[in-house]
Image (cartoon, rainbow over all chains, first blue to last red; front, side, top):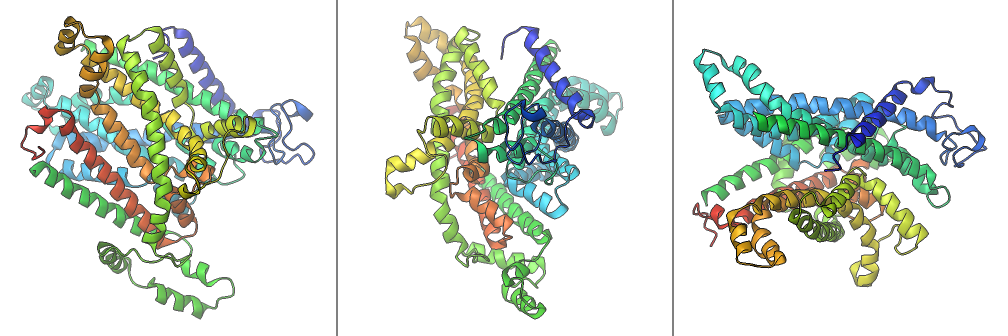
Length: 273
Length: 318
């Protein structure tokens, strides 16, 4: 939707690279540990007392917390949609290809999952299995699966009746071969474009959990948690909330922009077919 | 009729499955409610007696069947924490959630429909791009971050609205609305974008149809063509999406309700999970699932009202 210049796209890609590299190298930066409390400098402004982006209301270095928080957001944002993609594609293709009872069962399961309050699901997973990064990623990944399954099923239905599938069957291909060689390549394309959109949504969802204090356990910072904690000093030191908000906004926007552009490319490919 | 009956059975199964799933999951939760209620000084015997009294010793399946027969009679049990009836507690939290839901959807539609029409009339024009870009920026902000921004500017700096707090409707409509504006905006400012986008793309498709060409040839003014001729056939996706949003909001916008201290269903659900108040969680989930499913059913049914062509399969509607 934004302008047609490639500039914006490359800026977005560059920002995402910066965030990724800083997340990976978080421990190498000459910053205080993210949970170290500077008792003298509570909620100080950026640049004061060697704190590049200031400190939060507990005197912890905001820059360091952002870097370590990026690890959480990016890990969850990268792996959860992939889990959803694999699980969703599997279910969607099976439902769309075999029809009949498998389809009825899968559609009912998807509807059940969608009618289930998401937050309850996430909270229960973290309550029952503990709120580690792994469990969080798995839970958020499962949460995205139904949408992927819907898209996969719709696309499978579209392709399953096409001539090239019929031709393959006529040539003696079995179900497995048809699904793997004929259907999956066609179904995966639109799904991959959708992947980045989901990545943005997952980062938002993780932020929301962090905001409620339900993301990764306490000493590990999360962007959503940082925004929430800054609420207490919003009046005197707005930067405590605003800096993570800005970083989160830029990251999600970058992901959305890249996803949008990729979708445009895949769409042209689709129309040329 | 057959279509609706099939759909209805499907929805019943969904509600049944959701409640069963919740029951099993709640059962997996670590910790013991009996311990929590009995308190620190309770003896082992006290806790055991309490477990018996609460009916926690029976197998899950038995307890689920007990709960289900109660639910069919409209009894969802009592809260383990406050002792009040679950149905009553949910009913008292409902108005807040419904008001937030209606207000946010109203704002979202008021933004989405005019801007969608404006953008679709001249696609790729400056106005279209401007709103597209604004929308792109807004969907990239999580609603809770937007809420923080709104609180910062409108309640801390400008002091127009209170940052938190809820006043019941009978304490004065204006006072009540004042507390709802910021939370509703936090939801609406993110949601209108998707509504606007689907309306815009559907409208662009409709505007290429022959009947629009005819209307233009007849010399009808642009606004009349857009509103009287094009809007109705283009609002399918808009209604679907709106239904989806409402379905999701019935569970309460948990984060927003918490942030603004609004006593809605979402907040009730969150605190009940933390307190391990099983009957309350179970009741909330049942309520949310029924609401979600009903809204989806209504959305499906509304297609027939919008477009007579959908209706002709002898659905019984009109």
